[in-house]
Length: 100
Image (cartoon, rainbow, N blue to C red; front, side, top):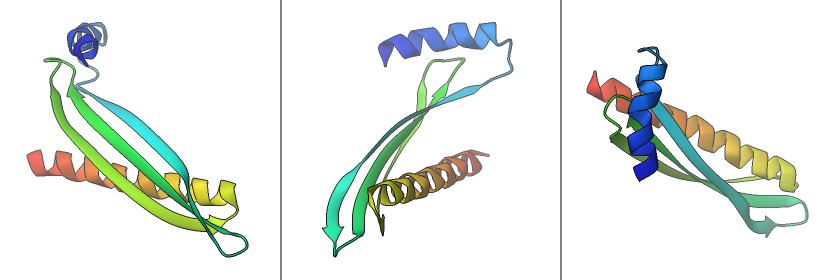
């Protein structure tokens, strides 16, 4: 985080004001359990950090966990990641809307 904090103002200068914030996402998904013969439960966890490029300060951190089922590992994992991405995007949007 410290390296990011000191590097971001340099990136802002290089981008000549085209970008004001950086979103940094960290996402994990993993098998949670088997539900019957074919259905699988997956859990996806994610964190998005919103950074101000000009000051190098973290503006907010948003965390979310989603559990979802699907038929087969790939489908369940994809469902969990898709739902997580949708929820995180909505929460980032909400956080910017609240500050406007």
